Image 1 (cartoon, rainbow, N blue to C red):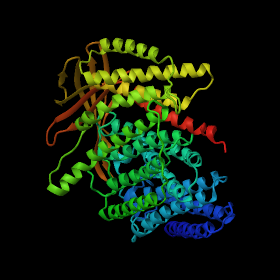
Image 2: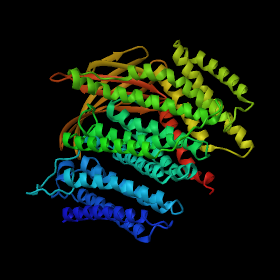
Image 3: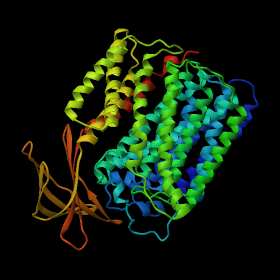
Image 4: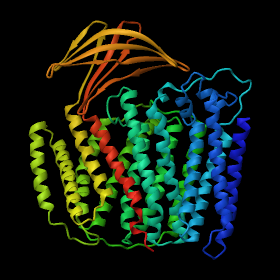
Length: 627
């Protein structure tokens, strides 16, 4: 019954989408500026059908309805309720249905929120968005239907991938999907703007809220995924340049560039075509990341649902989308000959944009190069932190300088604020103090340290100065402060991290520079959906004489049969002590990974601060909405 009901709702959404396109084409021929009520009603029906279909799938998971292939393959009656719910989107079919729900939700919200905008612009945006919706609905029904029936009906399911059975990873995909899929609405709006030829400020005001929302969710989604990988995968760090991590980071670079470019566009200072390009590129990168993750061409611990046929569909869609966008852009793009003063705020923003595009190119090359090399020569390599650190780190210095100096200049002006040199002097003093505490000899790392301190100090001065004038750009201040703190704490984390790998037997003790680690005991435990072997370790810090108990686990899941290695982390305000263990086959020897990671909580907090600036900007978005 749920299978038939879910399929009915999906077909209803598809039929409604075709109806919206049909009536939208008809409305383009009518010269008035009024969108008829029937299009609004159709949009609401479309939203009702898609949300209802997802709710039906959710019910199937909650009540373990194994008449659905999707539920049978990804759930189990003994799974905790929370993981039954998260299992709804923890697979290809369910996540694709969530994609479509977000596409439709953003389409409806855009239509209702922009009631006073140009009719042709709204109708064309709705048209392009619904073309995307139809393509994904057809893909869902033809290749990835979550409501496919199973007969005979099994008594039990295969279970959810144990790696996905975690609270952080349960919320990580929906957050990223809002970021990924949310970029579709300004992709559609950008193409619509080219054809309808709306003015720059109207375009900026129309798409800015959607860019802010998608950027915020993308940032928080990346953060949650990073925290999950830190404690669940046993990596022991905040970022490892895993290909799937990279696929979420690439659209973020373009979103960040777009967010800054809109600041120029909404003041009618230019960048109209550039904003269009970035809007198209953001969604292109989002679809590219989806293709890389789901096609099976990437080798990563958290790829899932890899299927060549699905990958071929997404690749075909990506190629069609890119070439169609290029055709529309070159056919309708206006001529722009804006000349910018070298030392003006808009010039700094443009330079910031190019750094973001450079970072995108570096990550894209590092992600795809092993794939191309494997395809052409059969050689298998992995591109890891050394490549990214070598190429990206030097360019952080001018980026930090631009973020520090840019806000001190006015729009279309060379004039800078007078307290600039005071901030520089204070930054030098703070840097010298920090330098003698840290005692790092690397010239590059010290430059990064100085410019991160410079950005933090300048941002705090900006807050002080603007608060006196009661003209605080709080969103920019919080975001820039968050980024400065992020780079600073990453630097300190890199300098003071301790990492050791060694083997131990039960009862043995390992001594290293400042720590003594004793393997005290092993214990077997049974939990509802897995069994575990728990290690009991005593960690003695010789410097402070502080002793800690850490209990890493080896978990054995039976539905499906999977072994995972759970880190034990003692998280303090200023430092984390981190331990994992894994058994060496057919021996009583355990491989131990011991790490001390300073300021991890400060790194997470810095990203939250960074993302908070974006959402505050969203609530302050009406500042320039004066027609």
